[in-house]
Picture 1: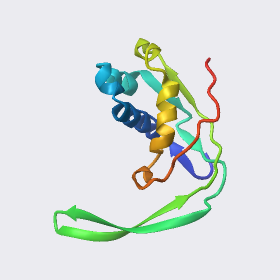
Picture 2: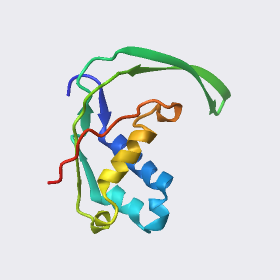
Picture 3: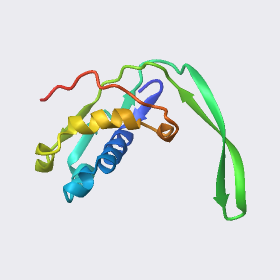
Picture 4: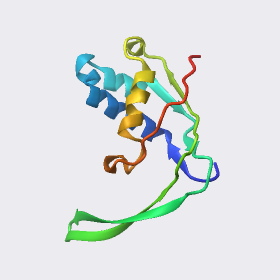
Length: 130
């Protein structure tokens, strides 16, 4: 693909986090396993459809074998991107726990690396069942 994108694994990670936040994972044993092995997101690279609107820089701290370090982290950001992707499942576990509900909660959690900072929130504009 061409241009900025979100990787499919990030969508599954967001859905897994939505399960934890809502308590779905505890309520239905094996649901996280079902997501990991029985849910498929495509395309692999979900194009964001436009060039970055800007770049955000922040200082991050990490521990290495040589001790604590500080480094600059740069991340491009995009405002108001419309994206489309497909989520399929072969797992009967998602008959009780709709994937749509996980995507709705995921919109509040956010998608991608900066979601913990209140970034990457989204609105689900539509869901079509196949």
